[in-house]
Length: 367
Image (cartoon, rainbow, N blue to C red; front, side, top):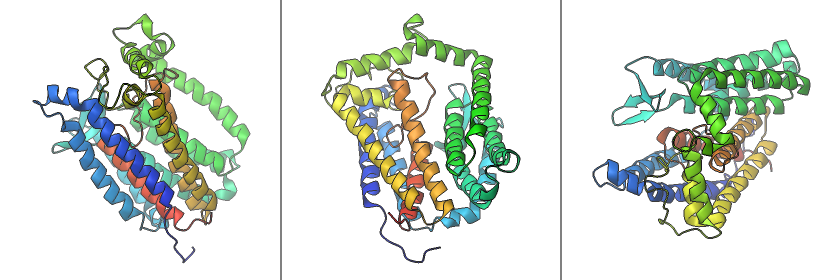
């Protein structure tokens, strides 16, 4: 391991804090009306909680930025075991908290945590350790690829019991990118891709609400009051935004048209209030964040650091593409948050911790 530390990636810090600041402003703007109605006039209800999560996350980010990243390699097995235990605990009645038909949270006082979110980062740390230690077997389907995917799909299975297809998809997609970058054979991915498509179709067909999400994605106006409602309301937000938007705080769709606009569909409110220019700025900030992450991964001093960086960047990129794809009608509704911007404590804290790990890798990265 290199002994000399340099300064962390300053651009990555600025971009992350910029996205976080935009998120805090937009969470308040998107949620104020809904919060005032639901919580006895407290229009700052969601904004205050998001600010608390952001504060905890930023402190964690700067603390972890100073923890040598190979520490996570040492503790990777224990971390992933704890996450598996939490995934099992979520399924136990009385421990797991059910929301919108999904038992994905564990209640802790007035707050709750979502173990599946933390499993994504735990899986990145563990899989990077596994792949870096078994690099010579990675081209072997039996000794390299199957053991890697076995642990991934075990976690995916537990997440699907909640059920949470969106989070599971992000985790699997992130791990597939890591395995591919580590040198796995393309032909293996072709066969697994075909198997994955078949399994994905089976998962969709096994639950009627998933079929409705697909059909609403193809033609949301076929069921405008039910399965297509969110997507149609998202279109009604994005369309009037035009080039410059209606103005900060001037959204119409947040007046009880778009359900809980501070979460998965916050990009629709951004587009409505800040227009095409505001939406493009957000996308450019994400692009800049991903570019810095790729540079860090390419310059990492060892394979483990490189794979961890790749996993973090892949996780962010996949979530951004899916979330914006859903909001703009390019993909079916999946319930995935927009990193740093959507309301949600577990998601926001997890992302800031992940950036902290990436910043520590940047202190050793040669780029």
